[in-house]
Length: 469
Image (cartoon, rainbow, N blue to C red):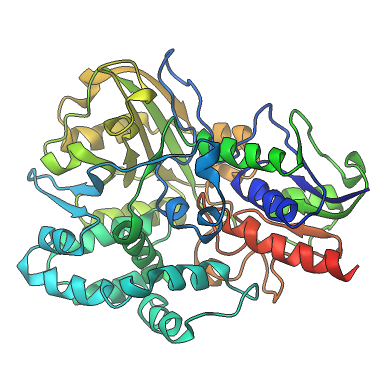
């Protein structure tokens, strides 16, 4: 009998398996698709030689993850590549605000009226970032805070809506960039704890940047899988699990799945009936004949580029998708251009480009024209560079990854108390009604992102049970 079976070979499932195997437990992973990866895959979606990331592409949380940093993933091929700028936010006048590794450079891009306010916001947390991120991403209940005072100060700054936090800024440049940071989790700016979301992304950039993985996000998953195999773990692909009886006998079962899928497989009925999924996204992967022709020079060297003319336009787009059940006319966009720093992603002189906008859950329309009209505002002539595109709306995204219910790449709404308390109000969020069944997906704390911390935290709950048995 195995000690643990993990269902789902995404970053969280693989991390959970690695953590258990490192501690001497026998582990097997079962994955429905023909390769490991989940939200961290790389595929030729458009033309031969153009390697795209179907989901996550830039990894500020991955490079800062306490779980990943504790593992020897570099020995298994993972290499972080850092663009000249982690992120840029261009404006229609050809200028840009930037999120740089340097706090001073970032503050200067906001203008003299807001530079001091930004430095006062982030500088108190940076010297204690490693402890803060460990405390923040380990909650709740998996580890005692190492620095509760700093964590409490962070909570005071971040738990109110981001609009409260950005009220300290006088000009639009800082407000717009920060609004875009919140938009990464598809949350309207007035929501609870949205200030913390923006602050985490900003601090992550200053601490270690927003890199891409050489060769694509698949490199993260492949490194975890290779390490697991060296530890004696097994991985079975092309193995769809429809009920617990499909799995071999084990002392514990760990699911890197949505709560909905887990309830169906394990027969939990309506246990997760109140779990809310968020809006979906419409994503386009581009093969380009050259670099994106950004008007703002800063955007040409940035790994990630946010698209939204100002904070009002961004909030309008977020509200349209999440509260008004309509596709925005001018979508807020997150774009990544991996080939500015990784030439292995495309043939010589060519580029790959990754872009998405928010749409209602399950939306079946085509947002391509609206996205490209937005891009043309900040990169005139963009369409002339397009060699091929691969589009994916909510139905296609859900078909590729069953965790993306309704096209929600966060595997659950990041709004209200569900920002912190997911998938249910519980002191043991990784436990389930069955004492031997656990959940470790992005539907558990600390939530979305390729960072493995949900798997790391869940593994702690599993090995505590295994040691007690």
